[in-house]
Image 1 (spheres, rainbow, N blue to C red):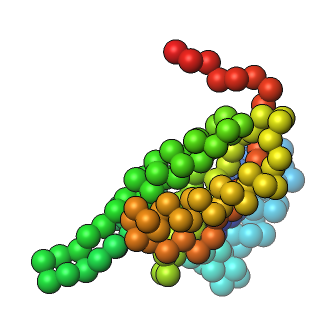
Image 2 (spheres, rainbow, N blue to C red):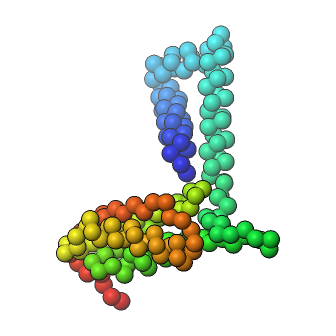
Image 3 (cartoon, rainbow, N blue to C red):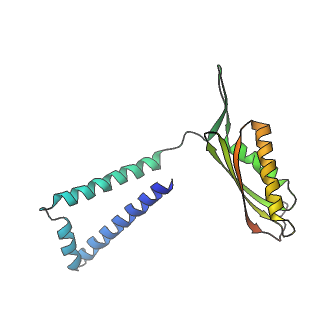
Length: 176
């Protein structure tokens, strides 16, 4: 669900929460919301009522569609031949990036995220490092090595490699 759909969901939820709170207040005997609701649903101004209802219905249909829609696989097409397409999943590229980054000394946890773009892929790497690591040097080295290795293994051009150090961890991971 993208940011637009999340904003729609927030507006939709707030609208119905306020509406049901007003109806509940009327049902409990409070008269003030009754006058507000009567003004809104007044039959002499149907354009306001119907325009709001059409918007609410369209938002509901959009949110219903987003809840049922499943993206068609997260793949990148490597080659297209007369026999068909050669694809690699974004999960496979994430695994490759995780393996490459975890080989660096001082890198503890790695969480890669791959974004498909028309000219290749963009890679975001979130990592935890130890305090003895020089973060600017290691992050530049991670960027270069990830870009080279992904190109070497898959043939996919890496447009960007963003490295984000989220934690400086003193503890070593447990070996089980």
